[in-house]
Amino acid sequence: MKMEIITKLEELLSKPAGEVANDVRTLQKEYQKQWTTEFELAKQSFIDDGGKAKEFVYEKNTDDQKITELFEKHLKLKKDEDEKVNREQHKNLIIRQEIVAKIGDLSQMSSNVGAAIKMLQGLQAQWKETGAVSPHKYKDLQAEYSKVVENFYYNLKIFRELQEHDLKKNFELKNELLGKIKAIVSLENIKEAERLIKIYRNDWEEIGPVPNEKWDVLKGEFRKALDEVYGKIKAFYNAAEELKESNLQAKKNLVEKAKTLLAESEGGNVAKWNETTNKLIEIQNAWKTIGRTSQKDNDMVWGEFRVACDQFFHKKKEYFNVVHEKQGEVKKLKIELIEKAEALQTDTNWQKTTQELIKLQDSWKKQILINEREEGKLFFRFRKACNTFFDAKKAHLAAAGAALEVNIKGKEELVEKITSYTLGDDISENVNHLKQFSAEWNAAGQVPFKERKRLNEMFFNKLDELYEKLNLGKAEKAILQFKNKLERMQLAENSGELFKREADYLKKQIDDIQNNIKTYENNLGFFKNAKKDNPLLKEVNDKIDDAKKRIADFTTKRKLVVEEINKLRVASEKKAEPAV
Picture 1 (cartoon, rainbow, N blue to C red):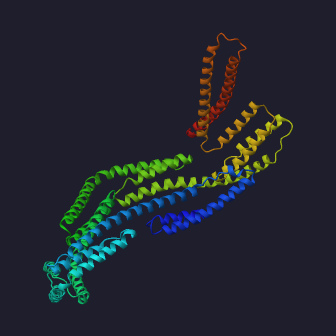
Picture 2 (cartoon, helix red, strand yellow):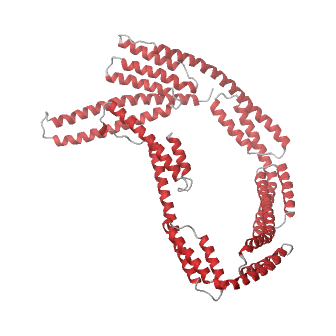
Picture 3 (cartoon, helix red, strand yellow):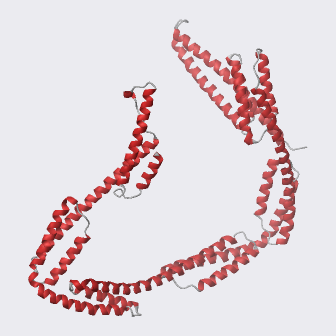
């Protein structure tokens, strides 16, 4: 449920804070209700368990903290948004007050009715365009605005007859001008159309208002005529720009194709170079059929195309200059690779030989012969030697896999055997039995990696449990369990690394304790004149004795680890010896 609240909050935070405020408040109520329920349940559980109500502390979990963080983030966004709205409303208030003042000044004008009305219309348009103000200021401000507008029309009432004459004359002039604008659409010369529409629009603005009952229709026809003219002009330039963009993109595509051919030709043979040359010539012919773009783009894209073509033919010339010189060397090298592969094809050192053959194969791929027939003959010999080895390796791994499956069964039987084993009264006999279990486990051989961890944990956990139950001295038991730990390390794939880490750890422990002993021995200098039964002197001597015992213990364990490291080294050296 909390994750759903988190998801909804994160989604709401991507929207304007004011628009989603109600949704956020709903989620707050929903979350508070859920949190209160969890709080009461937790508190009641605490009291039922014997706790005191006043001692109860209920910590918020990660989801609660996340939800709180999201609520706070929304609150901050809402606050910022409100502050922005307040600033904008204050700014709008000042603008509207200035408009009211200017309209008040207009009401005093009487010499130029048309200009006054035009200015009023401009101020009214500005009033409409100005954003909202604070609701507390709106009513009074709107009343002031209405009052000054009413005063304006009252003061100009005496000019009504003259105004009506002007309106009628203006209507006639605008109708005449509208006809001229409509005629522009039929012009083919776009430059002339642009020149005339600018003139006619200025003339339209200079003509005064028309009768109100005729204005909407006239304005609609004017807007429609403008849209038709500008639509034609825009369509012309859009088509021209689209064609330039289309040409530019087409040329860029050819540049990329030329660069791709250059990249593809690297390391190719003669046939490949000839093939890519024909393709590049086709691209060059296609370039000639594409129209121009803007001058700047055309210079840029042509420069790229010319560089790509020049680089291609330069590389081709270099290739054919050296290709014949290299073929003898390549053939000699491939014969050497074949002889090395044939020498390794019967080697049974599977891992090492596999790596060597892979390296030979990589080297083979890097050397190219132009003569494909001769290349095929050489590759037949090389592949035959490689296949001989890998077929033998595949058969060997199949046999080894079958042996690993047998080992699984043997180790599972040992797990059952040690699980059912019960310690007797004879400690020596018990120890011998546990050692025998370890010996049998090591002798059971390797198992597949996917089964190794499961079987090792079952066996060694039970072995540790039995060692822990032995009635042995602390030191003796510790050594036996440590040997058990070493046996477990032997079975790991990275046993050498584990033994080295253990040896380093024990060495560090020994060094640290020896440093402590030096400190204790230095402290004995303070007791040169003290009696032998001095308790502080006795405490320091005891610490030294205890530290020496621990050094002996760690030294014994490290010797065991070093023995295992030496065994691994000897085994590795024997494995690396060449077969006789």
